[in-house]
Amino acid sequence: MSNAYALAKEQYVALGVDTEKVLQTMEQIPVSLQCWQGDDVGGFEQAGAELTGGIQATGNYPGKARTADELRRDFEVAASLIPGKHRINLHACYAELKNKKVERDAYTIEQFSSWVDWAKEQKLGIDFNPTYFSHRLSADGFTLAHRDKGVRHFWIEHGIACRKIAAEIGRQLGKTVITNFWIPDGCKDTTVSRRNHREWLEQSLDVIFAEAIDPLLNRDAVESKLFGIGFESFTVGSHEFYLGYAASRQKIICLDAGHFHPTETIADKISSVLTFVPEILLHVSRGVRWDSDHVVILDDPTRTMMEEIVRGSYLDRVHIGMDFFDASINRIAAWVIGARSTQKSLLLALLEPQARLRQFEAENDFTSRLALLEEAKSLPFGEVWDEFCRRQNVPTGFAWMETVKRYERDVQSLRK
Image (cartoon, rainbow, N blue to C red; front, side, top):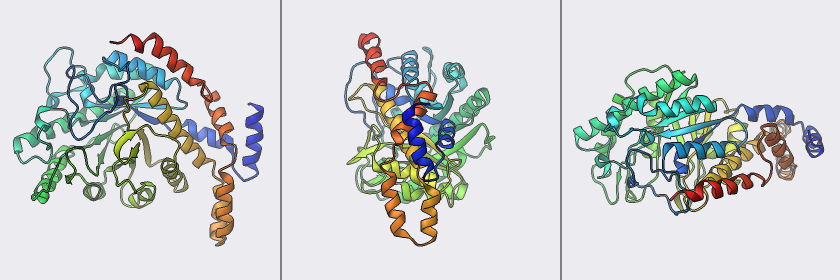
């Protein structure tokens, strides 16, 4: 224990906060790191596949992972610089086909066996996502809500296949998989048949989820979006649609920090939603003017999300995952910055002197409540963070950047 941490510990104890208990809690909360940050959502189904579905990765920083092995190696470097437990979040388009022609509706665990073997070695959990974009049958902007029953059937079968894959991953790893369903379906301009498309989506999802799967192996989540590029006027899977669907079917709802109006924060939605749904999958992102998937930083929106989770005692009902893809900076550094910033936000929330704050609130002493909230902001949380990093055997402060720069020089810069 460093002298700086010992002094910080005393300051927190004076306000009724046990930093040792906080550090133990931090050790138990995994963060699911998105595989697609390492290669700009390219995947490995086919070389040079065009990214579609209303999403876009901007930038062309050198060193992008070109193969699954390169991506896994990059992920290992990032994970070695992020304290605590880790999971990797896979999209179905990261299947390894091994020069075979396999359509998405026919995927099995075989296409992901290398990921599972690697996860066992690295002691990682895995989360999963069907891929409803960057495919010839999604080119006109619709998948599960398509007017053509045959197209809907293809994507329904893909969803069914992905749930089976996730369940098998969960069985082999002994860790529950969260399978998240997001579709890009929508239109660029005024749409007359909104009702039809939403009814088709409801029917498609019901077929996909018809087979019961052991929740210890796989749990299903559904994710909304405000709009996408080329889908500005109508998004079938809106927040209202999926909130209703998740509540009525008791599914996990995914709240993505970039999938709401720029003036909205999702912190206030957490306690409201958890009144009616069993769990939340939180996609931590940073939208700048639009769903731009900027790297997460230690900003107010991220802090307030974590505060709401901790204040509401929701840690056992919220799954924390990252969802951004920045190709303008070193991709490994983006992983590290985003994850560490998210963890710092969580740590700050856990270090809040809640007992005293709740006492002031119960006594209607809102003056003291506000004063303490402000004073808590200047407490030495950085020393507690450094202690967490030391105990998890990862670099403190800015030292982690040396590893990234060395790896960029020795490995990433050689990729052409």
